Length: 478
Image (cartoon, rainbow, N blue to C red; front, side, top):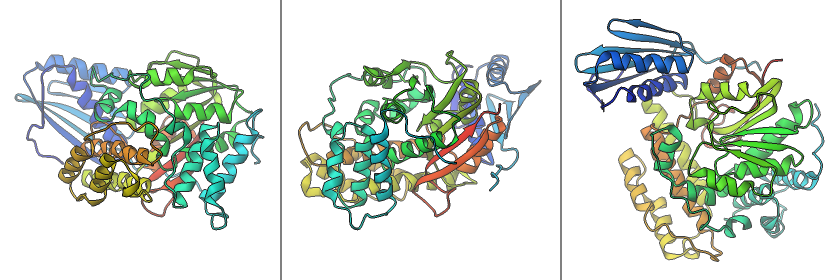
């Protein structure tokens, strides 16, 4: 437990809701306990009203006392206590995570047979089947494929074969439109993430993230295996700039997709991506979304760890028809029992993605600024948070674009974003990564049945429940 030395100052009663939510989420996501001591001169009755408002919003039973408020939520118990000139927020995890008990897929939808054929062949190569005899030149031709899914998957396979490739649609990307200049306004989770990571650059470089397309193929496989029929409507939650949403349209071209994204920086990219496709973009979060509540399929890729996991799952369930399917793909970390262990795992997890992305990039092939950046990333001391902060300061310098340059400079630049995510994860004011067993337990708390789980890419450990990229198929009971 932390000491009672104040770690932050509350200047207004509204801020207490953020701190209470932080403690709740950390305990639900696996910490056995979490405490914050907050200096403030705000009257207790105002603070109490805002804590009660938060409890009502998340539907948490609470008890008010003369000196505090007690909240009880699934897998978390939180006390907000009045002290002299300060407030103490203390949370404990309640109950261990629940481990799960230990058909033929539907045919590819109309117009998607070629995408699925190429994707399945590339997935075999990624798994090592026939990779020794495969010629990189044949796979390199797929970097120009019209399907973003196929081109991204080909890039990943080539990197595993020792060729640091970049999809052609990434090389051809126009960084000038839209001109993203949005920055945080109210300190919400999404906007805090934007303060740390350039969403404009992320829209440009995310396709070189290891296993990005692999998770989408596995997501599609789970839909084809567990859906009663191919979906005609899909809810895509946390679409970001829209890369996974486009991949969904390629795998399920007969479906209409409602894409939900609250970020003011990501949304202009999503709108541009949605043009001339069967995508309707909504600038809102899943907890605020007021659209239909009868989607046969709801999916989310890479967004759950930016949100309150329980409320995220509740929102997916609310908008899925009884008996409907929910598929979530995201990064998870290995099990942790303390803040120190969590920080170490988060660092090793992100560094694994960085090292794999840069594994075959040659310094001499890069523009001068990217050579310096690559050298810094490979040679820096990574053992302490302070060293990682220094590395990030160095890596962030001189972030220009190189139109027409055929070197894999985009891979170097993606790792700057991954480093930003690493540092944000260590500070833990943005990312809320949990581990697979805990995610499954939180889903069960919301009445969702686990149908399938697979780790499609490993960053740490040998178990299917260790860190990496995971995909979960869940069903809302009939």
